[in-house]
Image 1 (cartoon, rainbow, N blue to C red):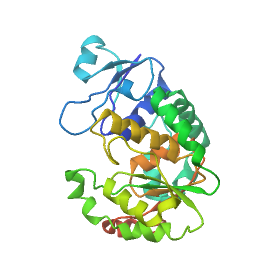
Image 2: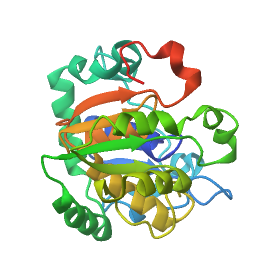
Image 3: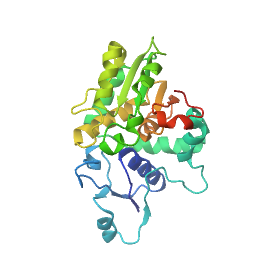
Length: 270
């Protein structure tokens, strides 16, 4: 047995959980939720059908299991002497996926396959993936306009014209759009109309404060990596996890949508 205490938002938590699943099947999962007005508001069982004993705090878990090894992080956990895959996107830009050792990749694909989404999520994934064909590309847009704390940091540097300039390069394609901001999505849909494929949201794009909003985001998490090309926003763990949940099959193109990242672009494209 082992304790998994994942930190951060949903996708960072999933990274830690997947790492722990590689080490041990019998996991005691710490999954805080609905502890404050904003932040993750749904339980693990709202998203996945898994037989883990869960706790809403580390203290509660450790009071019952005092001597278990603890795995806790907001990123993939480096196991043994493995390459630290958390650093690859910063080093290699759009080529980061090509530098993941096949052994590590196959291990994560296996544990991702062991995650079973709840029936609503799985049914929606099965429904909307039928809209994809070889002419469909995914554009995963992270604006950082979803919360006030993000708006005053990264969000203020978001430039939607960069999104338009990229989409304009693919006039003969259809776009599966995932996004963290309703107004930005509306502008894209208004401009590209029938070229846009999306999953309707029961609340709004970028909602992690309700069970429905988080489930809808997980649906897009599963769908995003199913197309041959995934255009990924620089620095986004959500975009990164779309590639992993697509079983590492998509070609990645990392793009810079924020003016304050221009000096970091390296191999990236505007």
